[in-house]
Amino acid sequence: MSSGSTRHRVAVIGGDGIGPEVCAEALKVVTAAGVDLEVTDFDLGAARYLRDGSVLPDDVLAELRTFDAILLGAVGPPVGDTSVPPGTLERGLLLRLRFELDLYVNLRPFAGVPGSIAAGADFVVIRENTEGTYAGEGGFLRKGTAAEVATQGSVNTRMGVERCVRFAFELAGRRPDHHLTLVHKTNVLTFAGDLWSRTVTEVATEYPDITWDYNHVDAACIYLVDQPARYDVIVTDNLFGDILTDLAGVISGGIGFAASANLNPARTGPSLFEPVHGAAHDIAGQGIANPLAAIHSAALMLQHLGEGDAAERILGALSVQTNDMSNPDFPNSNEQLSTTAVGDAIAERL
Ligand code: NAD
Ligand code: IPM
Ligand code: MN
Image 1: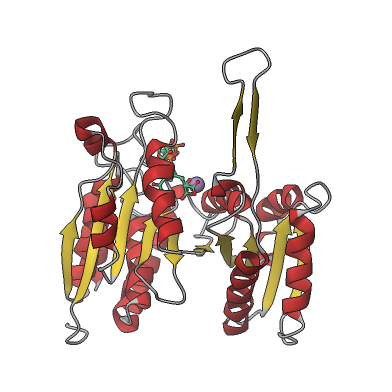
Image 2: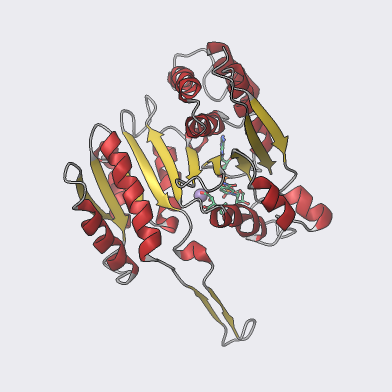
């Protein structure tokens, strides 16, 4: 079933480890949903870096800006492998894309699958995606000496925090529970925390229908595990959002289920869609990576591209597949299904 006449130009960065494997399943499912994509593959990641030293050349970035959306698998070397120095790809490719394309919202939805710790819970983490400790502020003094100093600052601008907080309130207004939770560490990070809590307090006055509360990030780790249903929309800073969303993925069924949308809400360029997980070199090439996070991320991409009908159909098929895979009586449990078999099963349900 074709969803319309619009052809969407999508840049695909499969990347490293399981990235290309899960991207292939996502594209298979989008095609099965009848969406007309013109896909261009970009050879970026560890292999490219080791071949010619390129991470994200300026002309490639300029070309990426011309696409309607970017689908990314994962980038990064095996943990501990220093043939690619730590951060080279993470900062030089993924974070550079987030910053240069002004993808200031990292939207990460979670719905606990049956049998998971978060079964029945349904919440979205809105992670600020361009500032905080990720901004790259800091450096070394006297590097390599006994008197070495390393600093890594956290950059929090009123503009950057406010636009992210506004996005979160708008989202809460479209969800049934109309509830928002700010997660931070205001009891210790008294400068950044103060800016974040004043911003939320002030923006909240414009959204009288939305209730909101505040959790310290350490307590949020407790509540996520023992009362996940208390959350509706969580808004938080870049690093807390990174850590909380791996935890949220695990309690919701597994990190292989967790999707994300790196959004440029002003649409001044393409947004980027990717699973929350990384390159998972420990399982790469074995055909056992869970592709559901990538497939869900592709559905978020379709929503963003105005293909809401196809996105809903994919999310519906994904939910049936997830329920089947999390049912211990299901003949093919998660462990037994291969990456391609999961993609095929979802494509067939469409
Ligand atoms: P990881 O997310 O790659 O793996 C952590 C654990 O989760 C591993 O045991 C892995 O097997 C498992 N896992 C991850 N995805 C899975 C899936 N789809 N199905 C089943 N199991 C899955 O984290 P890591 O090992 O810390 O990082 C590996 C590399 O990936 C690093 O270089 C890191 O910087 C990079 N990374 C990239 C991204 C990204 O590109 N968005 C995200 C996180 C980490
Ligand atoms: C994520 C990843 C990235 C992050 C890394 C690879 C830069 O862990 O998307 O969650 O820390 O944001
Ligand atoms: Mn992460």
